Length: 121
Image (cartoon, rainbow, N blue to C red; front, side, top):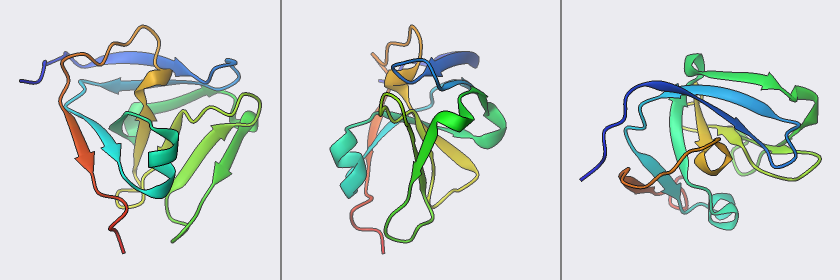
C-alpha cells in the first residue's frame, strides 16, 4: 500500500549544486520508464505540473538533450552531468523530477509505477 504524504515543498539540486529547484507535491506515485534514455539513467521520477516547479538557480548550467520526436526535453547539469528533471513528451506542461536529486527525501513506501516509453510511437 502506498504511503500518503501531505502536499509540501521540496528542494532539489544536481550533484555540484549549480542547478537548484523547488517542487510542490504529495507524491501520488513515482515512476520508472523503459525508454532508451530513462533505462540508461535509471531515474525514479515524480511528475509535477509546471506551476508546481520552480528553477531557483542554474539555468545557464543546464544542457538540454532531445531525441526521437524531439518533444521531451531532458535536462542535465553541464558541470556534473546529473539529470535533475525533464519536460514530458505526452504531457509537456508537466515536469518529471528525478527524486534522487531531492534533499532529505526517502521514497520508501511510495507506489512505483513502471511506464512504457520504449513502445511509444
